[in-house]
Image (spheres, rainbow, N blue to C red):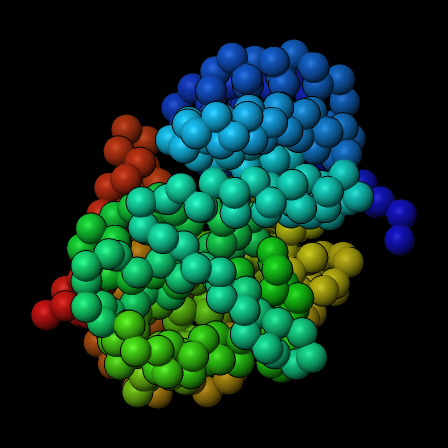
Length: 383
């Protein structure tokens, strides 16, 4: 299928300025970049073509991968690991927000390779686990803190633009707590080819819970889940459908009912998504790819079936849930948190009154929300 462009709400100059602003503050997706590299890429961008975007970031990424290869050969393991991680990060930016064109798909493949090279040098060893599933496989990254006997496990994932390779910042807080982590791709993203609306999408999670229960080096009876952004839905849903197997679930910046309705989605896809680098059209593109549709009309028609109200789950018993988001989020309505709190078992919640998507608040440290979430998870998994 030929690469099909989508409407871009921001101009090239606006995007360049936003890239420089975010990178200076290490904001998503520019969390690990170096200023000189960003300036090099920004100055070379001449259009909004997606393959052009991917190409320019990948050029820098491959340079760092080459440096990593040379440093590894020379025995400089620390330097090699750092170079490989930079290579991954630049290639990841190249595929951002999703691998929707030929160039972005190639950028994603480069990012996977570089990440797995970098992972060989992580302080907490990373195991690539592959589970047979429906004629294919599911892929996850399991990390068990050294010296910790049968720790609890937090399974966590992001949304349509943050994939399993992008979850190391959360892991860096969980591992020192003595908690193992299993990071996954949400349905329809990364290496998870089972689409968001596929009847087997939920099973891509329960298969991992089955797997953890069989391992001897983690405690499969103490599992928590943490879903972010559009992936937050799955944490809330699993808290109800897997209530007996989960000890905790974090619903972070997601939707459960109102966020799947046309009244919310139409404005969000046309004039919302203020935190999306390219504008709301790119959020529609990324979500549509995960769901398996092509237009906003198809998306709105399809996702209503996901509502926890319509599925009859909202009043069912659930595992303990922490609801967390910003009151001003224009990607996921705060009303979905209030809805969860008004039904079923009591919930915990933290609403940031001046916060946008995921609760991010101007002037607030970037890691404050991560600390809040991980502290709550620890209280539920390690009482």
